[in-house]
Image 1 (tube, helix red, strand yellow):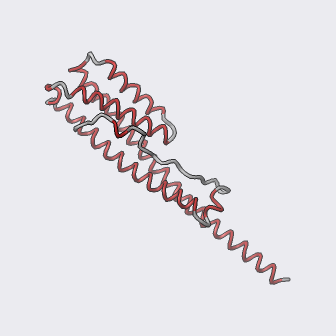
Image 2 (cartoon, helix red, strand yellow):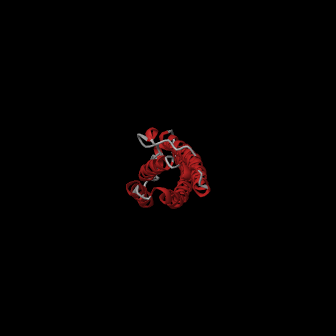
Image 3 (spheres, helix red, strand yellow):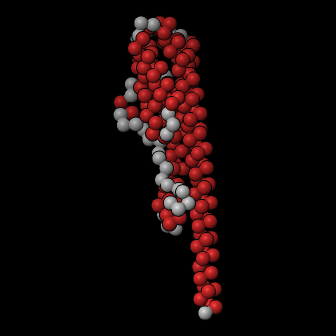
Length: 184
């Protein structure tokens, strides 16, 4: 009879140990995901802050294109209001599309293409987009690790009860391949 109790206690300790390890691994991944998402949000904010300088330099030469500038302002506002990963991704797409349209517009003005301030802002925007893409890839790599862990044994047994569920990828929005081409 004592052997049965000892065996039950040993099994319970083993289960508790596995649950404890599962929790710690998932918590570490969750923290990394939150950190990577914060980096994306910061880079989106920095990118958004570059847009007024770009639009101002273009407005000097193409002030009559108010509809294009209004789309950029709308896209920036949508980005500022985005809360979820899907909303951030969609808002980033909308901003890229609107900025691409005004940059295409700017390319029709030879004096603007020669403007140093305009070219400097475009170069900064390119760097911001490169950093954002690298952060998006880092974020998605951690999301993949977390989602794989949640779906793998023994973590799949403990994930739900411990409050861990699949995370959402920062995806390319459908149609993002059709963005206006921006030649920086």
